[in-house]
Length: 135
Image (cartoon, rainbow, N blue to C red; front, side, top):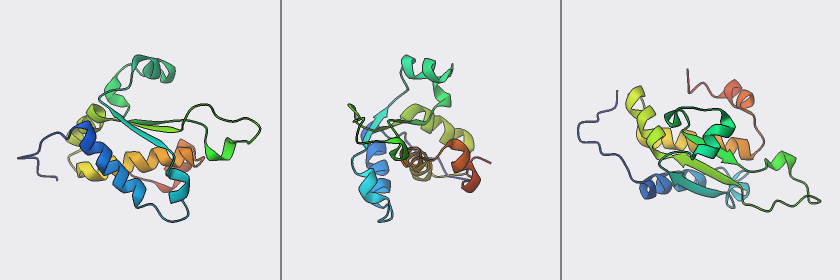
């Protein structure tokens, strides 16, 4: 169990720093493909995102990849917006507090890597086959 006696919730800039460290430490095969992904940290997903995903409670969404996965990109159809990973600070903090069995840095890293996996073309089912984190 993680000791939260003197824990304070990190601000968006701190979470972004943690997530950027994760991206910077990716293996060489993945690092070049992740460097152009925009990273955004917001307190909550906006209503449009939640509506599109049919999510009522914003605390249920810790992160999302918004873009075209590398496996679906084609030179003949250029993308007019950057690939973006959104991390939702309040949802991540809420999950960390509820779980009590991981560090906040580890949870931020996990959400970041999960969303990067979508950028690389992995589905949630693909990720679940090798990642038992949520069990």
